[in-house]
Length: 233
Image (cartoon, rainbow, N blue to C red):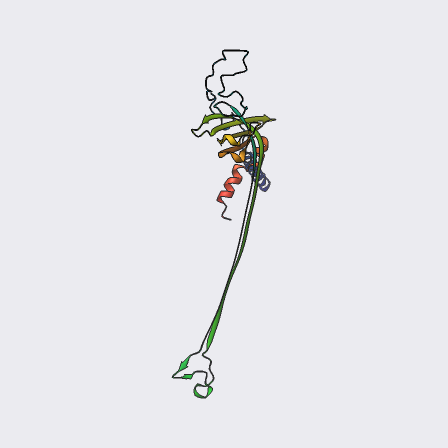
């Protein structure tokens, strides 16, 4: 009977461990890119064909000599994403308080400690209090991001600034990576190579999203998250 009881307990324990191990990893989903932009690209201004095919003059440009930097809706622009952020915070607190108290009782000007009047007695009392608190904390956080991404001009503001948006999605051996970017660029910040640094983009929104076996392994399981949530310590 005891052997059968122990076998039942081991069977139940093995079943419980197998269930928990199944919850330890999150299932992998093969889906479309995470943050797709509208499939239909923005419409570029309509250009008319040149009346003279062999002419050096192109009526799509208001000037005879013009560089190839992005300036109109639909133009492409290469963004050099180079972001580095370092944050450091340190706090230290030291407090200390000492207090000493002493007193003696008297009776009509005579202390009760007078042996001649009241015999041997002691009515003086005293006390001391000491409170000390020390606290030290430090936070250091460093982030870095480097990438090249080609974006499209989707709008031109009245002051000439360019609203850009771009996305790149790659999949290598089951690991998916998507980079999305959008923001506002000044034409004067665009180099002659038609590139712009990410630090010169206003209202920049840059996202790096990953999904796949490597990303899944780095995430805690549902049971671990639940136990961390309900743990009082």
